[in-house]
Structures are given as structure tokens and as C-alpha cells.
Length: 305
Image (cartoon, rainbow, N blue to C red):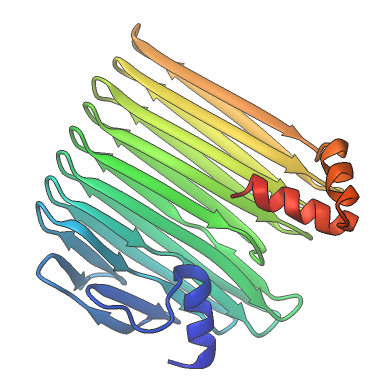
């Protein structure tokens, strides 16, 4: 791998070299490196670009890396990844995409991921998006995530986008079964003319199903963010959505919640708060010797932690 490849992989997946165990690294629309184990098999699709990730039943304390990097402009990459998680398995999946666009055209990656978690399985899914490159170049992500959770399954999603992405439109749809849980933590930072859209549609289908979606975002410059959530309580369930944002400069944040209690024992909650950084926070930090910019960066870092 080239130096640029390794730099991008470190930013999005904390990889310093080719990982051990199961992994799949994709570059500019092609498989760069891949390996499977008996516990976690990676199977290339035959009918379209992408892979099947098959985790055997009962597998514990294992991880798999599936990062994607783009290092060319005027290029669109679409990949379809399907995750099949066996009963009682417990694994970590580290994904994400890094784009280095050297020109003024558009470099785009669209990942369509489908998760099927069997009974009592658990997945921690970590996805980071990062963009860099020449001024005027576009770096675009339009990920789609589909989730199906069987009885007692738990999916923890940690999605992070903290710089350089000119446009993203993220769609997550989930159907949550009996005693299953969907837990989402989203962290988002936009600046300049960047635009980011996050959409969630969750159906709490099963008895005692749960979802907890927490979004933390900061909009700076003239950037624009939109957050949409639609939680449907179709059984005895609990759903919680929290959207907190800091808006700065000439930026804008739009939050649109929707909750649908379709069952008398559905308990659904939405919380949203958008505002500027409190002046007393900046004053206190500046009294310790920080400049105003350093104080703002410190507050933002803590908010998005």
C-alpha cells in the first residue's frame, strides 16, 4: 500500500498496517486486500460489487475491518455489504471510508449495508467518514444502512463524520424484534459550504424492543445540517431520540422529529436542543489562557466526545 493509503486507513479505521484475522480493504472500486477465518468469513458477491460477512454462531471477542478508501477524483464507488451474524455471537465491525480527492471533480462512495442479527447476538459497528484533497473538489457519501434484529439481538452503531466531507445523505432503517435493542451514537461536524443529512426510520416491532438514538452535531461556517427521525412503536416498547446541536457563524441546523405510537404500551420520547456555545464557557476557558478559537475548539471537542 502507498503512504496515502496508510494515512487514510489510520484516520478512518486506526489501522497502521494490514490487520490480523478477517478483513477486507477496498480501494478505488477494487479489492485491495482481504482475508477470512473460520469464525468470520468474507465472501465476494458475484452479482454486484460488495461482500457477505458471515459470523459463525457463538463467536466472541472477535473483530473485522472493512474500510474503503478513494484516492482519485471524478469517480463513484457503490458497494453492497451484507452482514449475517450467527446466534449468540459478539463481534466488533470497523468500517468507514476515507476520500482524498486530488482534483476539482467529485469523488463519491455509497455504501449499502444490511445487517441481519440472529437471536441473542451482539454487534458493535464503528463507521468513520473523512474527506480531504484539493480545494473545490467534492467528497460525497450517501450511505444506506438496513437493520433486522431478531429476538434479544443488540446492535450498537457509532458513526462519526468530523471533517472534509462536502455532502452526505445518510439513511438508516431498522426493524427491531422482541427484546432487541438498537443503540446509535452519531457525531457530526460540518464547516464551510458543507451539507449533511441524517435520516432514521425505526420500527419497534417486537415486544420489549428498544431504540436509543443520540446525535451530537456542530455546524460552522455556512454549512447546513438536517436531522430526521421517524420512530414507530408497534408493540410494547421504548424509543428515545435525542438531537443536540451547536450552531456557529452563519450555519443552520434543522431537526424534524416524528414519533408514531401504534400500540397502547409504546413509550416514545424525542428531545432536541440547538444553540450557540455558552459565553460563560468561553470566558472561563479564556481566563485559563486559551484564545477564543482555542476555547471554542475545546468546547466542541468535549461536546462531540
